[in-house]
Length: 153
Length: 82
Image 1 (cartoon, chains in turn red, purple):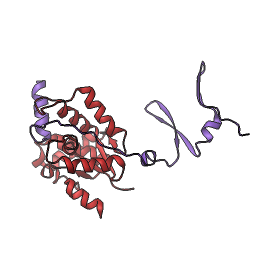
Image 2 (cartoon, chains in turn purple, green):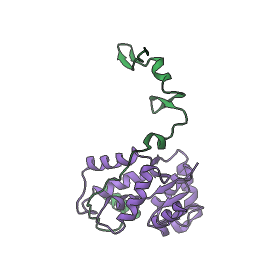
Image 3 (spheres, chains in turn purple, brown):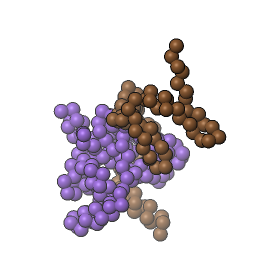
């Protein structure tokens, strides 16, 4: 079975927002993921973060309504992107990661996302925030540009 | 003349699915998913179900004010809560 990429929330938000410079790359990745050309997944946490950002007038100039945001995430859910969820064990994985990497303690929500990925046998993340996740265990952290290159090999 | 395969119907007894209808799906298995009974074609993957269908991500002009930062997002959420 082909290893999946966890698509991080920043890639998801940028793929939606046509006004940001990261849009084209992000859109390319998400489109490939939705059509199944790239094996990819999203954590429930990513979907919540997407909704939180796109509906928040403090964060965006043209916020969506909650219904509109839900409709958008339905597009991802009904595509080839697999949705992963925290497992009952994820809190223990999180606890372990936080203990062995004190330097990442202040980024607990990044660590919880990594724990969710590990518990679902996902060891690769596609993100623009490389430095926030790169020191966590054997997690393979790549930018969208790097993922495109790797997938085209 | 080919016999017409009856389709699933809802009767007073509940949902009735003729065995012939299930057989025409090929090699299937019955699974329970979140309190829903699913009759799934064996070896079917999500990829196969969506094969040939172009999937385009949704887009719009959000006008993101600052780059996405997870911890900032949660700081704001937690600050609003307490």
